[in-house]
Length: 164
Image (cartoon, rainbow, N blue to C red; front, top):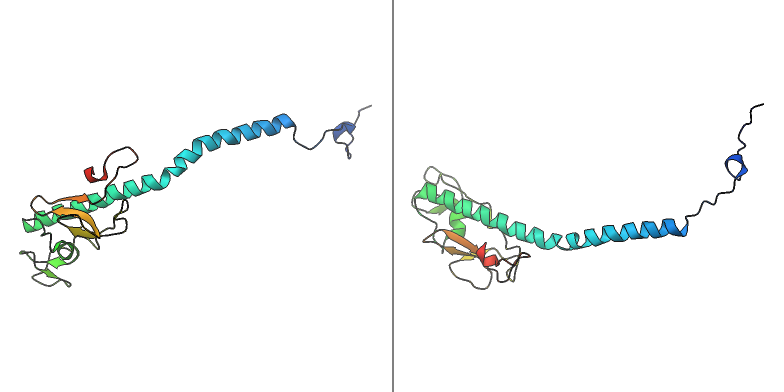
């Protein structure tokens, strides 16, 4: 005769198996969670710093490309005193600006807005000037067209922000 397993409150075939975790199973789970935390927490804590540094590099790339395009179209670099207007408005062949595009003002705008500084003591500022000062995020050399961040300090790799 065939025997059929009996199902009941005690499990298959009437055995008694507790539904709780053993101490060893709990210790293994806690150790695995600890290893994952040891790997993940340092990476997540550098996330905001790394994002700000990447944003700085991206903003500089956008600004430098806009200055280079201006140079290619105008044959000269924008002036430091009128940098914002020359980058964000329409221009004619002499660098005069206009808020609207007309027959004479056919170049640009090269940027929608000057990007803000994402790091350092001038974080959030978007001013552009020939020298460092209050509210100045970007230092611009109109002779060479070079633009650099106005931020002291170093990035997470030890490189100075001014060297970006």
